[in-house]
Image (cartoon, rainbow over all chains, first blue to last red; front, side, top):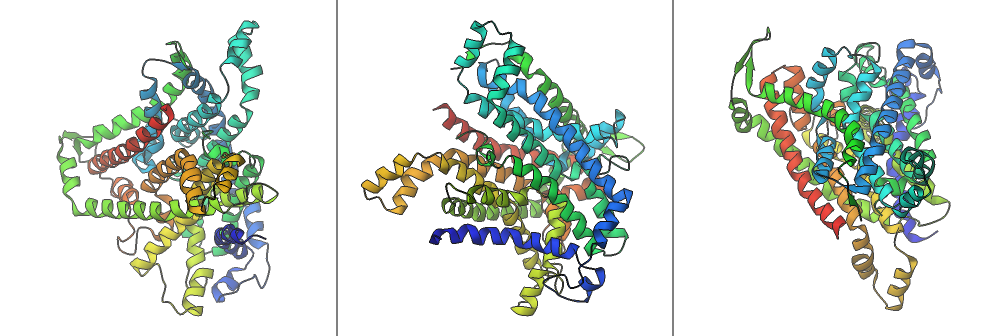
Length: 265
Length: 287
Protein backbone atom coordinates (compact mmCIF):
# COMPACT_ATOMS: atom_id res chain seq x y z
CA UNK A 1 0.00 0.00 0.00
CA UNK A 2 1.38 3.37 -1.01
CA UNK A 3 1.46 6.29 1.34
CA UNK A 4 -0.64 8.55 -0.84
CA UNK A 5 -3.61 6.16 -0.92
CA UNK A 6 -4.35 7.32 2.63
CA UNK A 7 -6.04 10.45 1.24
CA UNK A 8 -8.67 8.68 -0.91
CA UNK A 9 -9.29 6.20 1.93
CA UNK A 10 -9.90 8.99 4.44
CA UNK A 11 -12.07 10.86 1.96
CA UNK A 12 -14.21 7.81 1.17
CA UNK A 13 -14.53 7.05 4.89
CA UNK A 14 -15.83 10.60 5.37
CA UNK A 15 -18.35 10.04 2.57
CA UNK A 16 -19.53 6.71 3.94
CA UNK A 17 -20.05 7.73 7.58
CA UNK A 18 -23.41 9.54 7.21
CA UNK A 19 -24.59 6.84 4.80
CA UNK A 20 -23.64 4.14 7.31
CA UNK A 21 -25.53 5.99 10.00
CA UNK A 22 -28.66 6.24 7.85
CA UNK A 23 -28.55 2.50 7.08
CA UNK A 24 -27.86 1.62 10.73
CA UNK A 25 -30.79 3.73 11.90
CA UNK A 26 -33.11 2.05 9.43
CA UNK A 27 -32.58 -1.30 11.20
CA UNK A 28 -33.29 0.07 14.68
CA UNK A 29 -36.60 0.20 16.48
CA UNK A 30 -38.00 3.61 17.41
CA UNK A 31 -37.52 2.70 21.08
CA UNK A 32 -33.85 1.99 20.62
CA UNK A 33 -33.28 5.20 18.69
CA UNK A 34 -34.91 7.37 21.34
CA UNK A 35 -33.42 5.53 24.32
CA UNK A 36 -29.86 6.55 23.54
CA UNK A 37 -26.75 6.11 21.46
CA UNK A 38 -25.73 2.76 19.97
CA UNK A 39 -23.19 2.34 17.19
CA UNK A 40 -24.77 -0.87 15.85
CA UNK A 41 -28.46 -1.82 15.92
CA UNK A 42 -28.97 -3.76 19.18
CA UNK A 43 -32.37 -5.22 18.35
CA UNK A 44 -32.06 -5.72 14.63
CA UNK A 45 -35.46 -5.16 12.99
CA UNK A 46 -36.85 -5.17 9.47
CA UNK A 47 -40.09 -3.60 10.63
CA UNK A 48 -39.37 -0.24 9.00
CA UNK A 49 -38.84 -1.85 5.61
CA UNK A 50 -41.93 -4.04 6.00
CA UNK A 51 -44.01 -0.92 6.68
CA UNK A 52 -42.74 0.68 3.47
CA UNK A 53 -43.31 -2.38 1.28
CA UNK A 54 -46.81 -3.04 2.58
CA UNK A 55 -48.20 0.50 2.66
CA UNK A 56 -49.30 1.67 -0.82
CA UNK A 57 -48.74 5.38 -0.06
CA UNK A 58 -45.10 4.48 0.60
CA UNK A 59 -44.28 2.19 -2.27
CA UNK A 60 -46.28 4.21 -4.76
CA UNK A 61 -43.99 7.10 -3.93
CA UNK A 62 -41.10 5.10 -5.36
CA UNK A 63 -43.05 3.96 -8.41
CA UNK A 64 -44.12 7.55 -9.11
CA UNK A 65 -40.57 8.88 -8.80
CA UNK A 66 -39.09 6.21 -11.04
CA UNK A 67 -41.84 6.72 -13.64
CA UNK A 68 -41.33 10.44 -14.13
CA UNK A 69 -37.54 10.10 -13.96
CA UNK A 70 -37.56 7.50 -16.75
CA UNK A 71 -39.98 9.56 -18.82
CA UNK A 72 -37.79 12.60 -18.39
CA UNK A 73 -34.62 10.71 -19.36
CA UNK A 74 -36.22 9.42 -22.57
CA UNK A 75 -37.61 12.83 -23.59
CA UNK A 76 -34.39 14.70 -22.76
CA UNK A 77 -32.04 12.37 -24.64
CA UNK A 78 -34.34 12.09 -27.69
CA UNK A 79 -34.65 15.84 -28.25
CA UNK A 80 -31.04 16.52 -27.31
CA UNK A 81 -29.55 14.09 -29.86
CA UNK A 82 -30.37 16.02 -33.08
CA UNK A 83 -29.60 19.36 -31.43
CA UNK A 84 -26.22 18.17 -30.21
CA UNK A 85 -25.49 16.88 -33.71
CA UNK A 86 -26.29 20.28 -35.18
CA UNK A 87 -24.08 22.08 -32.65
CA UNK A 88 -21.16 19.70 -33.17
CA UNK A 89 -21.27 19.64 -36.99
CA UNK A 90 -22.59 22.94 -38.29
CA UNK A 91 -22.31 26.64 -37.77
CA UNK A 92 -25.53 28.52 -38.13
CA UNK A 93 -26.97 31.92 -37.41
CA UNK A 94 -27.10 32.47 -33.66
CA UNK A 95 -25.64 29.09 -32.70
CA UNK A 96 -23.41 30.42 -29.95
CA UNK A 97 -26.17 32.58 -28.48
CA UNK A 98 -28.61 29.68 -28.61
CA UNK A 99 -26.16 27.39 -26.88
CA UNK A 100 -25.60 29.89 -24.09
CA UNK A 101 -29.34 30.52 -23.75
CA UNK A 102 -29.87 26.78 -23.31
CA UNK A 103 -27.21 26.73 -20.62
CA UNK A 104 -28.80 29.66 -18.77
CA UNK A 105 -31.72 27.36 -18.00
CA UNK A 106 -29.31 25.09 -16.18
CA UNK A 107 -28.37 28.13 -14.10
CA UNK A 108 -31.88 29.20 -13.18
CA UNK A 109 -32.67 28.68 -9.50
CA UNK A 110 -35.49 26.12 -9.25
CA UNK A 111 -37.05 28.28 -6.56
CA UNK A 112 -37.63 30.99 -9.20
CA UNK A 113 -39.70 28.61 -11.32
CA UNK A 114 -41.69 26.84 -8.62
CA UNK A 115 -44.74 29.11 -8.60
CA UNK A 116 -44.97 29.92 -12.35
CA UNK A 117 -44.57 26.22 -13.18
CA UNK A 118 -47.42 25.39 -10.85
CA UNK A 119 -49.63 27.92 -12.63
CA UNK A 120 -48.50 26.91 -16.12
CA UNK A 121 -49.06 23.19 -15.66
CA UNK A 122 -52.33 23.73 -13.82
CA UNK A 123 -53.66 25.87 -16.65
CA UNK A 124 -52.92 23.24 -19.31
CA UNK A 125 -54.41 20.48 -17.14
CA UNK A 126 -51.20 18.56 -16.53
CA UNK A 127 -50.93 19.27 -12.82
CA UNK A 128 -50.32 16.12 -10.75
CA UNK A 129 -49.28 13.97 -13.73
CA UNK A 130 -45.98 12.23 -14.48
CA UNK A 131 -45.70 14.21 -17.68
CA UNK A 132 -45.75 17.53 -15.82
CA UNK A 133 -42.75 16.63 -13.66
CA UNK A 134 -40.93 15.00 -16.57
CA UNK A 135 -41.42 18.09 -18.76
CA UNK A 136 -40.50 20.48 -15.97
CA UNK A 137 -37.25 18.62 -15.37
CA UNK A 138 -36.31 18.90 -19.04
CA UNK A 139 -35.70 22.59 -18.24
CA UNK A 140 -32.32 21.77 -16.74
CA UNK A 141 -31.75 18.27 -18.18
CA UNK A 142 -32.04 19.08 -21.89
CA UNK A 143 -29.31 21.75 -21.82
CA UNK A 144 -27.07 19.38 -19.90
CA UNK A 145 -27.76 16.49 -22.30
CA UNK A 146 -27.04 18.72 -25.30
CA UNK A 147 -23.81 19.87 -23.68
CA UNK A 148 -22.58 16.34 -22.88
CA UNK A 149 -23.60 14.83 -26.25
CA UNK A 150 -22.04 17.70 -28.14
CA UNK A 151 -18.76 17.04 -26.36
CA UNK A 152 -18.83 13.36 -27.28
CA UNK A 153 -19.94 13.98 -30.89
CA UNK A 154 -17.14 16.46 -31.43
CA UNK A 155 -14.70 13.62 -30.83
CA UNK A 156 -16.09 11.71 -33.85
CA UNK A 157 -14.28 12.82 -37.02
CA UNK A 158 -16.43 14.43 -39.67
CA UNK A 159 -15.01 12.06 -42.27
CA UNK A 160 -17.28 9.38 -40.83
CA UNK A 161 -20.36 11.36 -41.92
CA UNK A 162 -18.93 12.14 -45.34
CA UNK A 163 -17.93 8.54 -46.07
CA UNK A 164 -21.42 7.37 -45.16
CA UNK A 165 -23.01 9.87 -47.56
CA UNK A 166 -20.65 8.83 -50.35
CA UNK A 167 -21.69 5.24 -49.68
CA UNK A 168 -25.28 6.30 -50.26
CA UNK A 169 -26.60 6.30 -46.72
CA UNK A 170 -29.57 8.57 -46.06
CA UNK A 171 -29.20 10.84 -43.04
CA UNK A 172 -31.64 9.00 -40.71
CA UNK A 173 -30.10 5.64 -41.61
CA UNK A 174 -26.58 6.95 -41.11
CA UNK A 175 -27.54 8.53 -37.78
CA UNK A 176 -29.15 5.40 -36.33
CA UNK A 177 -26.93 2.63 -37.71
CA UNK A 178 -23.51 4.30 -37.83
CA UNK A 179 -23.41 7.45 -35.74
CA UNK A 180 -25.33 6.34 -32.64
CA UNK A 181 -23.24 3.18 -32.04
CA UNK A 182 -20.15 5.41 -32.18
CA UNK A 183 -21.37 7.66 -29.39
CA UNK A 184 -22.95 4.91 -27.27
CA UNK A 185 -20.87 5.94 -24.28
CA UNK A 186 -21.99 9.55 -24.67
CA UNK A 187 -25.66 8.57 -24.84
CA UNK A 188 -25.21 6.41 -21.75
CA UNK A 189 -23.54 9.22 -19.85
CA UNK A 190 -26.17 11.77 -20.93
CA UNK A 191 -28.96 9.41 -19.87
CA UNK A 192 -27.18 8.84 -16.58
CA UNK A 193 -26.99 12.57 -15.89
CA UNK A 194 -30.64 13.11 -16.80
CA UNK A 195 -31.60 10.27 -14.50
CA UNK A 196 -29.44 11.64 -11.73
CA UNK A 197 -30.65 15.22 -11.77
CA UNK A 198 -34.29 14.25 -12.19
CA UNK A 199 -34.01 11.71 -9.38
CA UNK A 200 -32.44 14.11 -6.89
CA UNK A 201 -34.52 17.21 -7.69
CA UNK A 202 -37.37 17.64 -5.25
CA UNK A 203 -38.60 21.22 -5.16
CA UNK A 204 -40.29 21.19 -8.58
CA UNK A 205 -41.40 17.57 -8.30
CA UNK A 206 -43.14 18.38 -5.04
CA UNK A 207 -44.69 21.59 -6.28
CA UNK A 208 -46.16 19.97 -9.40
CA UNK A 209 -47.81 16.98 -7.73
CA UNK A 210 -50.54 16.41 -5.15
CA UNK A 211 -51.76 12.82 -4.96
CA UNK A 212 -51.49 10.82 -8.16
CA UNK A 213 -47.87 11.44 -9.09
CA UNK A 214 -46.50 12.30 -5.66
CA UNK A 215 -42.75 11.59 -5.44
CA UNK A 216 -41.20 9.63 -2.60
CA UNK A 217 -39.74 12.83 -1.16
CA UNK A 218 -43.18 14.29 -0.53
CA UNK A 219 -44.27 11.07 1.18
CA UNK A 220 -41.20 11.30 3.41
CA UNK A 221 -41.87 14.89 4.41
CA UNK A 222 -45.46 14.07 5.28
CA UNK A 223 -44.36 11.16 7.47
CA UNK A 224 -41.72 13.20 9.21
CA UNK A 225 -44.31 15.78 10.22
CA UNK A 226 -47.53 13.85 10.75
CA UNK A 227 -46.64 10.47 12.19
CA UNK A 228 -44.62 11.94 15.03
CA UNK A 229 -40.91 11.45 14.90
CA UNK A 230 -40.44 8.07 13.27
CA UNK A 231 -36.73 8.32 12.56
CA UNK A 232 -36.32 4.62 11.78
CA UNK A 233 -38.99 4.72 9.11
CA UNK A 234 -37.53 7.91 7.66
CA UNK A 235 -34.06 6.30 7.59
CA UNK A 236 -35.39 3.17 5.86
CA UNK A 237 -37.15 5.30 3.22
CA UNK A 238 -33.96 7.29 2.72
CA UNK A 239 -31.86 4.15 2.39
CA UNK A 240 -34.17 2.84 -0.33
CA UNK A 241 -33.76 6.08 -2.34
CA UNK A 242 -30.00 5.45 -2.53
CA UNK A 243 -30.38 2.08 -4.25
CA UNK A 244 -31.58 3.15 -7.75
CA UNK A 245 -28.71 5.65 -7.99
CA UNK A 246 -26.19 3.03 -6.90
CA UNK A 247 -27.45 0.58 -9.53
CA UNK A 248 -27.38 3.14 -12.32
CA UNK A 249 -23.91 4.36 -11.44
CA UNK A 250 -22.51 0.82 -11.48
CA UNK A 251 -23.52 0.52 -15.15
CA UNK A 252 -21.67 3.65 -16.21
CA UNK A 253 -18.67 3.26 -13.87
CA UNK A 254 -16.16 3.11 -16.72
CA UNK A 255 -17.48 6.30 -18.30
CA UNK A 256 -18.13 8.35 -15.17
CA UNK A 257 -14.88 10.27 -15.22
CA UNK A 258 -15.10 11.18 -18.89
CA UNK A 259 -18.83 11.81 -18.56
CA UNK A 260 -18.35 14.29 -15.75
CA UNK A 261 -15.91 16.15 -17.95
CA UNK A 262 -18.75 16.38 -20.52
CA UNK A 263 -16.57 14.47 -22.96
CA UNK A 264 -14.15 17.37 -23.02
CA UNK A 265 -10.85 15.67 -22.25
CA UNK B 1 -14.04 22.48 -39.07
CA UNK B 2 -17.73 23.00 -38.92
CA UNK B 3 -19.53 24.05 -42.08
CA UNK B 4 -22.10 26.81 -42.24
CA UNK B 5 -25.54 25.31 -42.74
CA UNK B 6 -28.66 27.21 -41.72
CA UNK B 7 -30.79 24.08 -42.04
CA UNK B 8 -29.19 22.94 -38.81
CA UNK B 9 -31.90 25.00 -37.15
CA UNK B 10 -34.33 22.17 -37.90
CA UNK B 11 -32.28 19.85 -35.70
CA UNK B 12 -32.41 22.32 -32.87
CA UNK B 13 -36.14 22.98 -33.21
CA UNK B 14 -37.44 20.28 -30.79
CA UNK B 15 -35.09 21.43 -28.05
CA UNK B 16 -35.98 25.02 -28.75
CA UNK B 17 -39.73 24.35 -28.54
CA UNK B 18 -39.43 22.36 -25.33
CA UNK B 19 -37.14 24.72 -23.51
CA UNK B 20 -38.99 27.80 -24.75
CA UNK B 21 -42.24 26.39 -23.39
CA UNK B 22 -40.59 25.63 -20.06
CA UNK B 23 -38.49 28.74 -19.73
CA UNK B 24 -40.20 31.60 -21.56
CA UNK B 25 -43.78 31.17 -20.34
CA UNK B 26 -42.85 30.98 -16.65
CA UNK B 27 -40.30 33.75 -17.10
CA UNK B 28 -42.95 36.03 -18.61
CA UNK B 29 -45.25 35.20 -15.68
CA UNK B 30 -42.50 36.28 -13.31
CA UNK B 31 -41.83 39.49 -15.25
CA UNK B 32 -45.57 40.18 -15.25
CA UNK B 33 -45.87 39.80 -11.49
CA UNK B 34 -42.76 41.79 -10.81
CA UNK B 35 -44.26 45.05 -12.08
CA UNK B 36 -47.72 44.69 -10.58
CA UNK B 37 -49.45 44.82 -7.23
CA UNK B 38 -52.30 42.45 -6.35
CA UNK B 39 -54.81 42.34 -3.52
CA UNK B 40 -56.18 38.95 -4.50
CA UNK B 41 -59.31 38.32 -6.62
CA UNK B 42 -57.11 38.48 -9.71
CA UNK B 43 -57.04 42.28 -9.57
CA UNK B 44 -53.71 43.70 -10.61
CA UNK B 45 -52.38 47.24 -10.51
CA UNK B 46 -49.36 48.65 -12.26
CA UNK B 47 -46.48 49.02 -9.87
CA UNK B 48 -43.56 49.81 -12.19
CA UNK B 49 -40.14 49.21 -10.78
CA UNK B 50 -41.28 49.73 -7.21
CA UNK B 51 -40.78 46.15 -6.11
CA UNK B 52 -37.25 46.07 -7.47
CA UNK B 53 -36.36 49.18 -5.54
CA UNK B 54 -37.99 47.85 -2.39
CA UNK B 55 -36.20 44.50 -2.63
CA UNK B 56 -32.79 45.96 -3.40
CA UNK B 57 -33.10 48.35 -0.45
CA UNK B 58 -34.49 45.85 2.05
CA UNK B 59 -32.18 44.66 4.81
CA UNK B 60 -33.67 41.21 4.55
CA UNK B 61 -32.63 40.74 0.92
CA UNK B 62 -29.19 42.23 1.46
CA UNK B 63 -28.61 39.95 4.42
CA UNK B 64 -29.73 36.86 2.50
CA UNK B 65 -27.56 37.87 -0.46
CA UNK B 66 -24.58 38.37 1.85
CA UNK B 67 -25.07 34.94 3.40
CA UNK B 68 -25.43 33.45 -0.06
CA UNK B 69 -22.14 34.92 -1.30
CA UNK B 70 -20.37 33.88 1.89
CA UNK B 71 -21.72 30.35 1.54
CA UNK B 72 -20.75 30.02 -2.14
CA UNK B 73 -17.29 31.51 -1.52
CA UNK B 74 -16.59 29.08 1.33
CA UNK B 75 -17.86 26.16 -0.73
CA UNK B 76 -15.50 27.02 -3.61
CA UNK B 77 -12.53 27.69 -1.31
CA UNK B 78 -12.93 24.32 0.41
CA UNK B 79 -14.18 22.03 -2.36
CA UNK B 80 -11.88 23.00 -5.23
CA UNK B 81 -8.50 22.47 -3.47
CA UNK B 82 -9.80 19.40 -1.62
CA UNK B 83 -11.10 17.94 -4.87
CA UNK B 84 -7.75 18.51 -6.60
CA UNK B 85 -5.83 16.89 -3.72
CA UNK B 86 -8.04 13.80 -3.68
CA UNK B 87 -7.93 13.50 -7.47
CA UNK B 88 -4.11 13.72 -7.49
CA UNK B 89 -3.75 10.92 -4.94
CA UNK B 90 -6.23 8.55 -6.57
CA UNK B 91 -4.98 5.35 -8.22
CA UNK B 92 -4.71 5.66 -12.03
CA UNK B 93 -5.41 2.05 -12.99
CA UNK B 94 -6.40 -1.26 -11.53
CA UNK B 95 -9.20 -2.81 -9.55
CA UNK B 96 -9.63 0.09 -7.13
CA UNK B 97 -10.39 2.73 -9.77
CA UNK B 98 -14.05 1.84 -10.47
CA UNK B 99 -14.63 1.13 -6.77
CA UNK B 100 -13.33 4.57 -5.82
CA UNK B 101 -15.32 6.26 -8.57
CA UNK B 102 -18.61 4.58 -7.66
CA UNK B 103 -18.23 5.21 -3.92
CA UNK B 104 -17.28 8.83 -4.52
CA UNK B 105 -20.17 9.47 -6.88
CA UNK B 106 -22.71 7.92 -4.51
CA UNK B 107 -23.51 11.07 -2.45
CA UNK B 108 -24.43 12.92 -5.64
CA UNK B 109 -27.14 10.38 -6.49
CA UNK B 110 -29.02 10.71 -3.25
CA UNK B 111 -32.18 12.85 -3.47
CA UNK B 112 -31.52 16.27 -1.98
CA UNK B 113 -34.17 16.06 0.70
CA UNK B 114 -32.74 12.70 1.80
CA UNK B 115 -29.32 14.35 2.05
CA UNK B 116 -30.88 16.89 4.40
CA UNK B 117 -32.65 14.22 6.49
CA UNK B 118 -29.52 12.09 6.56
CA UNK B 119 -27.40 14.90 7.97
CA UNK B 120 -30.16 15.76 10.39
CA UNK B 121 -30.13 12.21 11.75
CA UNK B 122 -26.31 12.20 11.68
CA UNK B 123 -25.93 15.38 13.73
CA UNK B 124 -28.73 15.04 16.32
CA UNK B 125 -27.27 15.45 19.81
CA UNK B 126 -27.50 12.24 21.88
CA UNK B 127 -28.90 10.23 18.93
CA UNK B 128 -26.77 11.04 15.90
CA UNK B 129 -23.27 9.65 15.39
CA UNK B 130 -21.62 13.06 14.93
CA UNK B 131 -23.79 14.80 17.51
CA UNK B 132 -23.05 12.13 20.10
CA UNK B 133 -19.34 12.05 19.31
CA UNK B 134 -18.90 15.84 19.57
CA UNK B 135 -21.05 16.34 22.67
CA UNK B 136 -20.47 13.25 24.76
CA UNK B 137 -17.03 12.04 23.70
CA UNK B 138 -15.16 15.26 22.90
CA UNK B 139 -17.23 17.45 25.20
CA UNK B 140 -17.82 20.14 22.58
CA UNK B 141 -21.17 21.84 23.03
CA UNK B 142 -22.75 21.27 19.63
CA UNK B 143 -26.41 21.68 18.70
CA UNK B 144 -27.15 22.93 15.25
CA UNK B 145 -30.78 23.78 16.02
CA UNK B 146 -29.65 26.26 18.68
CA UNK B 147 -26.27 27.68 17.65
CA UNK B 148 -25.93 29.66 14.40
CA UNK B 149 -22.23 28.81 14.10
CA UNK B 150 -22.86 25.07 14.44
CA UNK B 151 -25.64 25.33 11.88
CA UNK B 152 -23.35 27.12 9.42
CA UNK B 153 -20.53 24.63 9.84
CA UNK B 154 -22.97 21.73 9.45
CA UNK B 155 -24.48 23.16 6.26
CA UNK B 156 -21.02 23.70 4.76
CA UNK B 157 -19.68 20.28 5.78
CA UNK B 158 -22.84 18.74 4.31
CA UNK B 159 -22.24 20.45 0.99
CA UNK B 160 -18.56 19.46 1.01
CA UNK B 161 -19.70 15.90 1.64
CA UNK B 162 -22.29 16.12 -1.11
CA UNK B 163 -20.42 17.81 -3.96
CA UNK B 164 -16.62 17.63 -3.55
CA UNK B 165 -16.74 14.39 -5.55
CA UNK B 166 -17.87 16.37 -8.58
CA UNK B 167 -14.59 18.30 -8.50
CA UNK B 168 -12.67 15.07 -7.86
CA UNK B 169 -14.24 13.24 -10.80
CA UNK B 170 -13.72 16.17 -13.18
CA UNK B 171 -10.07 16.63 -12.18
CA UNK B 172 -9.51 12.90 -12.34
CA UNK B 173 -10.85 12.87 -15.91
CA UNK B 174 -8.31 15.57 -16.78
CA UNK B 175 -5.46 13.72 -15.06
CA UNK B 176 -5.96 10.33 -16.71
CA UNK B 177 -5.79 12.00 -20.13
CA UNK B 178 -2.11 12.92 -19.53
CA UNK B 179 0.15 10.49 -21.45
CA UNK B 180 2.77 8.64 -19.39
CA UNK B 181 5.50 10.10 -21.59
CA UNK B 182 4.97 13.50 -19.96
CA UNK B 183 5.74 12.11 -16.52
CA UNK B 184 8.77 10.21 -17.81
CA UNK B 185 10.14 13.35 -19.43
CA UNK B 186 9.61 15.22 -16.17
CA UNK B 187 11.45 12.49 -14.28
CA UNK B 188 14.43 12.63 -16.65
CA UNK B 189 14.56 16.39 -16.22
CA UNK B 190 14.50 15.90 -12.46
CA UNK B 191 11.35 17.96 -11.97
CA UNK B 192 10.05 18.37 -8.43
CA UNK B 193 6.51 17.15 -7.58
CA UNK B 194 5.45 20.79 -7.42
CA UNK B 195 6.67 21.59 -10.93
CA UNK B 196 5.05 18.40 -12.25
CA UNK B 197 1.79 19.67 -10.78
CA UNK B 198 2.29 23.27 -11.91
CA UNK B 199 3.48 22.64 -15.48
CA UNK B 200 1.96 19.28 -16.45
CA UNK B 201 -1.07 18.44 -14.35
CA UNK B 202 -2.60 21.86 -13.75
CA UNK B 203 -2.63 22.94 -17.44
CA UNK B 204 -4.30 19.64 -18.35
CA UNK B 205 -6.93 20.16 -15.68
CA UNK B 206 -7.68 23.74 -16.67
CA UNK B 207 -10.74 23.06 -18.82
CA UNK B 208 -12.34 20.53 -16.50
CA UNK B 209 -11.54 22.71 -13.51
CA UNK B 210 -13.40 25.61 -15.12
CA UNK B 211 -16.40 23.34 -15.68
CA UNK B 212 -16.16 22.22 -12.05
CA UNK B 213 -16.04 25.77 -10.72
CA UNK B 214 -18.88 26.83 -13.03
CA UNK B 215 -21.12 23.95 -11.94
CA UNK B 216 -20.23 24.34 -8.26
CA UNK B 217 -20.92 28.07 -8.45
CA UNK B 218 -24.31 27.63 -10.13
CA UNK B 219 -25.49 24.82 -7.89
CA UNK B 220 -24.28 26.24 -4.60
CA UNK B 221 -25.76 29.64 -5.48
CA UNK B 222 -29.14 28.02 -6.19
CA UNK B 223 -29.08 25.58 -3.28
CA UNK B 224 -32.42 25.09 -1.58
CA UNK B 225 -33.56 21.63 -0.53
CA UNK B 226 -30.62 20.38 1.55
CA UNK B 227 -30.24 23.35 3.92
CA UNK B 228 -34.01 23.77 4.06
CA UNK B 229 -34.54 20.20 5.24
CA UNK B 230 -31.53 20.35 7.58
CA UNK B 231 -32.02 23.69 9.33
CA UNK B 232 -35.14 25.26 7.80
CA UNK B 233 -33.07 28.44 7.48
CA UNK B 234 -32.54 28.68 11.22
CA UNK B 235 -31.72 29.12 13.97
CA UNK B 236 -33.37 32.50 13.46
CA UNK B 237 -32.43 33.52 9.96
CA UNK B 238 -28.79 32.51 10.22
CA UNK B 239 -28.80 29.93 7.41
CA UNK B 240 -31.57 31.48 5.29
CA UNK B 241 -29.91 31.50 1.89
CA UNK B 242 -31.43 33.28 -1.13
CA UNK B 243 -33.57 30.40 -2.41
CA UNK B 244 -34.96 29.65 1.03
CA UNK B 245 -35.88 33.30 1.50
CA UNK B 246 -37.43 33.43 -1.96
CA UNK B 247 -39.63 30.38 -1.39
CA UNK B 248 -40.69 31.83 1.98
CA UNK B 249 -41.87 35.02 0.27
CA UNK B 250 -43.40 33.36 -2.81
CA UNK B 251 -45.11 30.26 -1.45
CA UNK B 252 -45.21 31.04 2.26
CA UNK B 253 -46.46 34.63 2.30
CA UNK B 254 -47.71 34.60 -1.30
CA UNK B 255 -46.29 38.09 -1.92
CA UNK B 256 -46.17 37.63 -5.67
CA UNK B 257 -44.81 41.05 -6.64
CA UNK B 258 -41.78 41.17 -4.34
CA UNK B 259 -41.09 37.47 -4.90
CA UNK B 260 -41.07 37.96 -8.67
CA UNK B 261 -38.82 41.00 -8.48
CA UNK B 262 -36.47 39.10 -6.20
CA UNK B 263 -36.49 36.13 -8.61
CA UNK B 264 -35.36 38.34 -11.47
CA UNK B 265 -32.59 40.00 -9.48
CA UNK B 266 -31.46 36.57 -8.24
CA UNK B 267 -31.45 35.09 -11.73
CA UNK B 268 -29.60 38.10 -13.12
CA UNK B 269 -26.78 37.71 -10.59
CA UNK B 270 -26.40 33.98 -11.30
CA UNK B 271 -26.45 34.66 -15.02
CA UNK B 272 -23.86 37.42 -14.87
CA UNK B 273 -21.30 35.39 -12.92
CA UNK B 274 -21.94 32.25 -14.98
CA UNK B 275 -21.51 34.24 -18.20
CA UNK B 276 -18.06 35.36 -17.08
CA UNK B 277 -17.08 31.72 -16.46
CA UNK B 278 -18.63 30.60 -19.72
CA UNK B 279 -16.75 33.14 -21.84
CA UNK B 280 -13.51 32.13 -20.14
CA UNK B 281 -14.30 28.51 -20.96
CA UNK B 282 -15.25 28.93 -24.61
CA UNK B 283 -12.28 31.21 -25.19
CA UNK B 284 -10.18 28.18 -24.30
CA UNK B 285 -12.19 25.91 -26.61
CA UNK B 286 -11.62 28.15 -29.59
CA UNK B 287 -7.85 28.06 -29.33
